[in-house]
Amino acid sequence: MSLPIALTFNPGSSSIKLGVFALDGDRPIRLGHGEIDLSDEPLVLHLVENGKATATPLSASPGGDLHAVIDEMLGLLTRRFALAEIAVAGHRVVHGGDRFTGPTLITPETLAAIEALVPLDPLHQPQSIRLIKAIAHLRPQIRQTASFDTAFHRSQSDLVRRFALPRALFDQGIKHFGFHGLSYAFVAGELSRLYPDVAKGRVVVAHLGAGASMCALEAGVSRDTTMSFSTLDGVPMATRCGTLDPGVVIHLVKQRGWSIARVEDMLYHRSGLFGMSEISGDTRMLCASDDPRAKDALDLFAFRVSREVAALANTLGGLDGLVFTAGIGEHQPTIRDAICRRLGWLGAMVDPAANAANLPRIDSKAGKIAILVVATDEEQVIADEAHALLGQGHLVPHATA
Image (cartoon, rainbow, N blue to C red; front, side, top):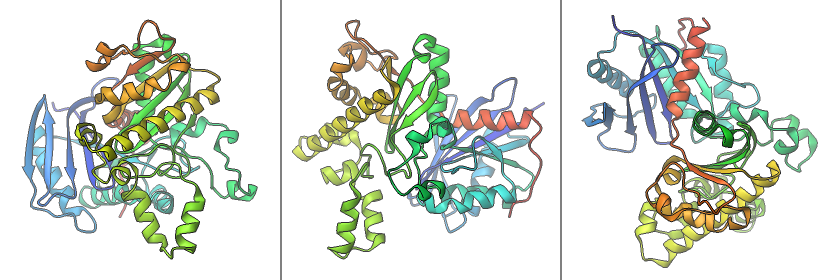
């Protein structure tokens, strides 16, 4: 008898990562994972199963609603994995606002609440909504859940969440939310499992990828994070600016006549490592380049990351561990080394050989804090949360249009 299946959807601004999990026992078991880059022509479904990778061109094009893409993808997955019953589709939803403090069943009411948050995250939220609606249209019998990046950070105090703006704006939702929560939840769980002594202490987790942020954990609980009201804040990213004096925006609009749309496009898509280097937002290309602009971009990235680690350590009142995760954090030894060199005064010392080999623990015995490399897995968290709701009997068939 075939086991029931959970599908997970982890959308980016122009891509869809997916996971296929068997619901067996206490925790979903991954059968495979895949990705579609929506900027490809034609679209290609990249799948990995048992370590074997395949690439299958799709005849469907993205369009406005993703129905054709998801329909073709579901057909391919069904044949590839011999899927019997798809019990649940779990979605990563970046913004849950103040309403969603944990995973939830998707109903017409909760979908409307998710749609209402689009202005707070115009980059990712619409993609999640398109996926939810496509599944509901094509397979209304599949139950769906949402897992929110912001929910993990609801443990932060109002002191941390406030801006120094008129008080009424905080009550209206202008506050620090924090993102990458599913990644931090997974890493916190892995720390507890693999490094329980470190997990009990004060840890900064650096989620460094195309999107980048950091989180201050106290005994696995979020106390502060670098992204705040939007996914623009914090450290520079591949194409996003990170923390910026708001006076720059005022100047560009009032003095230079830029439209808000032009400013938004620059801050989200033309800044960060790409804007600084004028070469690429990909650190692999920048590390391989002899162009001084590439070095400038990487130097600024390491400087800003290290500065934020120090600020988060201040929130925690000290630092017992530093964890690197996500694409850059897991695979770029030179960047890890550059960051830690600036944090030597905090006791961060890297073992060169361990770092070069991408070992799970890379701190030197002469250092004062643990320095770890932990691979993150947001899809596993989505599957775990969907499975938990399923086990609690919270999922019922629905027909969200």
